[in-house]
Amino acid sequence: MAKKNPVSRKKSPEELSGFCAEVAMMLHAGLPLHDGMDALARSYAGSPMEADYVHLSDMVIQTGSLREALECCGWPAYMVEMTGIGEQTGHLEEVMNGLSDSYRREGHLRSAISSAVAYPIVLGVMMLLILLAMIIKVLPVFRRVLAGLGVEMTDSGSLMMRLGLNIGVVMLTLVGLLVLAALVCCLLLRTRARAKVQGGLQRLFPPIREINRKMSAARAASVLSMLVSSGYPLDEALEMAGNVLSDQDGRKRLQQVREHMAQGMDLGEAIAASGLFDSLTSCMIRTASVAGCADTALASAARECEQDVENRMDKLVSIIEPTLVGVLSVVIGTVLLSVMLPMAGIISSIL
Image (tube, rainbow, N blue to C red):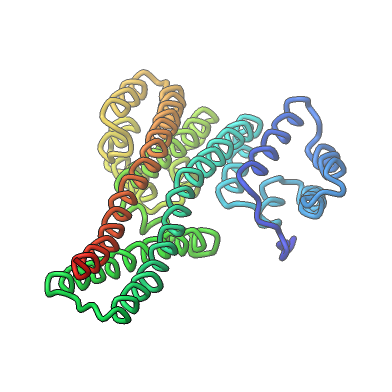
């Protein structure tokens, strides 16, 4: 058995999208897989990806399967499973084109979210440092100057200074914790704890949970469409589709579909009962199942879900930056007020 590549480099969504598009082009041109992978490895000579492609080409020659080669070389599990389904159903070119589009959208989303989140975080860090310096360095200087002049703080001035300093400490602590939490999440998303972090974010933020549910539905529909059109038994097709999904909720719903079908329901009725899709899509699949064209309806459902996911992602990204900037503006305003109150207290003491 082929061994896994222990030094496989983590690849960006853009690199994964480019690889899938290149494989799809080779298949469309009728190039044998092993020849195409060898040509691909030579084309990346001298690049950081050379070692990965050379090893992948060797594994394709050794195993005769792109799916097994990708698994041996440590490529993403979703790509591995989808490639296997493409090979089994004879839709490998279609699968690779779909994966290319999927990873392209993922790369676009990551870039957009990074841009939307980076500006408020940088602004927060800068304001945190500036205001921290004012509270720790500037205000004590004023107090020492007053003490040198022999000016005593009034009761109202002392109260305003204590109140302002307390507000400043609380708000600065809050900003610091938020910035730290954001940085920790970003770091954890690059480690093996990525799945747990994503699960936590989905529980905390309903829009992310809904996007993930729609994405699972799109993947399930796409896989089921290919398997049903290729004549696979429905129970086996549902099992294979479950292996592609990474979230537990999607797998649970597909398992419910299998259980409903075991009770005598047809595919359309079982899908509608499981809640995998929304009511309109479920009705369409149920009608198509009765007419004997469930695979066409599933393919259409997959496209609609993918479009819905893209629209929801764009909407989410469009509100992240203004929301974060608005929240940060309130926090910064409060911290500025906490600095101005002690200043007002000092001025009232002089007057």
